[in-house]
Image 1 (cartoon, rainbow over the protein chains, first blue to last red):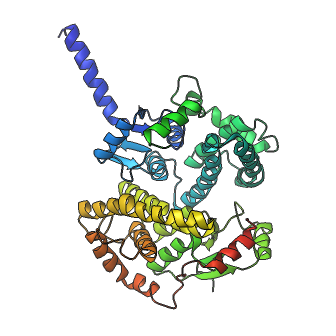
Image 2: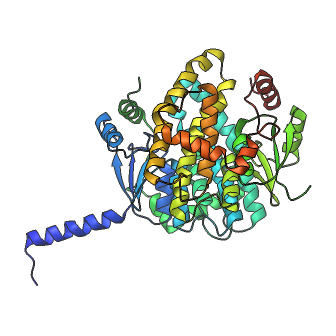
Image 3: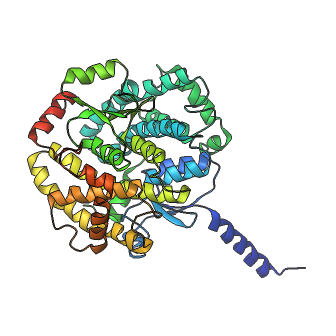
Length: 242
Length: 223
């Protein structure tokens, strides 16, 4: 059967649309923020996703009016027929669905503890750009202190005591993905942060070479850069902040 | 008495209260070790009991668990309070994140300076009435069962009841526009294990007072 050009292109569009219908859709600003960990986890799991970037207040108000945001907040991810909000809930669902949440209750418990730790560390950096330059100096010192005295020693010890390539069990989990995300994020602020953590250095190399993660780390991926002025301006405008 | 979870925290609500609620709702007896001095806290750190140098700490099933969310998830998973299947878990996770955000605002209030306290309390009540309670009222309406998720008690229900009572302590009429939440509150409060926890003499802690705030600040050496 021969198709006309129009039929061909309509058919292509239909296929693309139905393929996209299966892909998770992320609603957020065009920047890292709270959504970045979701991008990391989907990418590590090899899941393609699409993104809708919030640029205007009108877009946000439409989402509110349509009842798409349970608590009036983003991130929001459309996935498997649900409009999921609350970053941690979204990450937990993706992890469980894609075999990144360990094999039993106790492995889950370890993963949960580890991701809460890296979450706390990344939260210090997530808000960094909102501070005045004087406050940023203090925050940077705090980030450095917390990374080197509280968090990285823990993960270094876990790798040492656990004795496999991963934090939990013997395969990649959400805990590993969030840790590599945190390491790279801190390194952007303090490039020598891993100098006293040889096992974390090896971990970083190994993780960055995992094909899905390697791909995510290449230019042109959906990974977002650190926040700049325009990101702050956009967020303030969308949320009507003074 | 081994076998019972052991909770290490200050003698007050803080971040441990949700854990007390969940264990109580699950009918699980637990013991408590109260932090009263900085020396106790430093010793816990020196002995390597606190993964991230922080409490809450719950010793349970041979693990020294930290991080409130991790502890709650484990208890919920173990005691059949985490729904049936991935999607129910997803709903429960989403709902508890909302009630956590709401309760967190109240939890941190006593530790803020007096002008901030005065300013923030009305904002919290406003958020409860305009953001959170409407979401849960709607969830109950759409779901059409007595519970937020599935057809039995889950972590989400326990957490919501805790949040409702906590906000009501600040403003007693906060549920006036939410008939389903009123019904929910009555029903869940009357469940045997929860009813017991709500009675005087239980391990439920009272609202924080100045003495509690001073103790916490002294132990953590903040401010």
